[in-house]
Length: 273
Image (cartoon, rainbow, N blue to C red; front, side, top):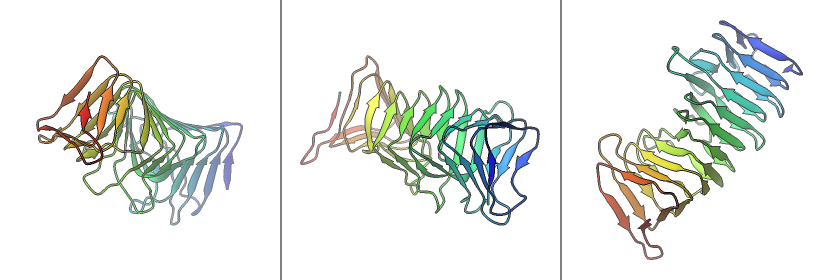
């Protein structure tokens, strides 16, 4: 086990951690900064791991396209966060992008901050508790799925105004359990989006968007402005099936190339107000 404690470790210009000893476990109790073209490789013939402990900070300022790497197939090397991670990575200068080719888990005291205009491509999401903060124009993109990753938000507080993109063409299941959305948006840029019933609380302005159909099967109440968008791929509608969707703000929008359909069920009405 290698520990970073009470110090700031600065990795610069094409430096990397990992690769020297298979199965190595890294623990951060202080601060780690990835700058220049640095990255952390968590696979060298066997799975290694990185633990960002409670009270620790991990700064992702590297321009490497992948700031975390592991075995490219299963991508099951763990990155576990119980501290704070700040994502400010950029690939190619203007794309403001970084990717994690590892299994990411977050504890209930963990915080993931994605700065304004930055995109984090999370290729193997496991279970995320705690807080996710996404700045304006930023996004958390769940770009792949792998057997080791649960793709589950549990008791998570997601604060925007940025975006969570599930990238689900139809087979990538993302679970939401007791999730709060605060001034944030949820999208699926690869297919239909059924708004999860596991999002139990909304505050601020909220948006939902789908490449195909946008579907509501449970009630949604937003205290401020609400924006709905479907059919980014050229076709798709917005459907309310036994769901009441309401907004208390002064601005509401529903945009789709297809129909907006309200269908009541035997136990619930369909309502958009």
